[in-house]
Image (cartoon, rainbow, N blue to C red):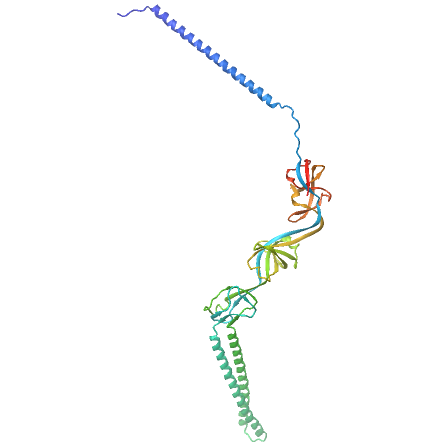
Length: 412
């Protein structure tokens, strides 16, 4: 049988369970509160420590003033000397004289007597055209001349005979012993003989001209060089045929390089500073230890519309033929020269904006000075204003200086 529990006992049990649950909740809350308090306390202590450290870190104890070290520099007095403004222009070596050697008459090339790099003199025979055709033409012309001379001789003989007949007719006419028709016939015959003689003389002249032309044609089979120099290229070979259509085609090229020229472009601002017959130093990469002295031979009267430059032609003597056409060269031209001016090394001067400055040494301190510049060469620059001849100029160690910097000087 099931046991019956009174209702009052049930209520009492339920109340007891609720009380226990409430006590547990209160205990948990108090535990959490105590734990949170301890954590907040630790955080507060940490924050206070950080604040103390930060405060003590920001407050610095007084220290002794750091000693400023002097900058080591090199100084020198400005030099009073001459200075030259130069410019370097680049160009290519070219021959002064060059000729294309071609035939004067057509035909097959029988021989070529020279090779590239051969030295020739003006008038030397360098090639030969087969002369057979020219010889035939000469023979024909000489035969024609012989025929013309024979005709002339016959015409002269005929004229003598006709002249005798005409003179006889004239004597008979004076004594009225000849008919008028016979006299007219003798007169006409004489005049025609005179005309025939003149005609044969002209034929002889023409034949002589033909012979001269034929002889020249035979001579033209010997091809000669028009200038002295070096054979630089061979365009045709033995056995090739030169027709009348391409008779001007070059067989050989000869260059006279005993004197060569260097053509360099010069900008418009340089034209007023250079002049003809001015000496120029010329350098070549092929001969780094050698220099040539050239002369400005010509300055172009017009500007190149593409490059906006003028062509300056410099002549160079080349007795050893060391300068070859096509070589790259540099020309150093003198533009200005100032005598007895104040100069300093270029490394001593620097610019700030549009102004130029340098440092001078005064009582172990660097003093900044503004200066004005003149012309410059590769190492020095002219000072036109702002510097005295007795100033000690800082020429090395400028980079680490400011106005008033302590310096330790070493004189150059």
